[in-house]
Image (cartoon, rainbow, N blue to C red; front, side, top):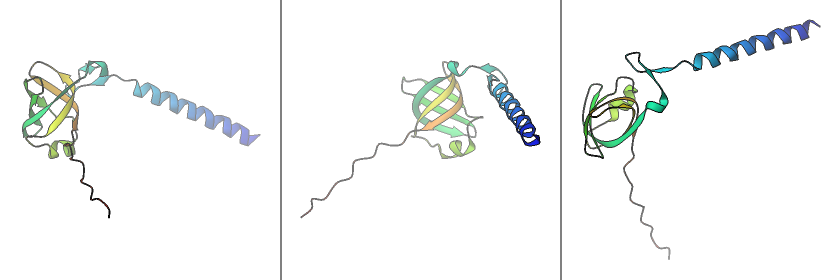
Length: 120
């Protein structure tokens, strides 16, 4: 009987933990300045890196805009590999000439298909 009681208590603890995690994950997303942001408000901008200085990037978007991108919340490892000429997609809050990146996807350059040697 004690084993069943302990199992019941264990299940209650697990259920409470799952409920607490669900509530915590329901917290709204926020930008670096604490403003609430819905993930539906995020936009994608694709373009070419013009320059990188600290956590700021200049991006020439495919539509011709030159934007200043705040990369403060982007991983330092991602920031470190960005270089002028790189093709990227910025995901975050986007304005006319400014963006606050939540994520940056570094596009891979197109690779030429390898040549195959005919077999004799």
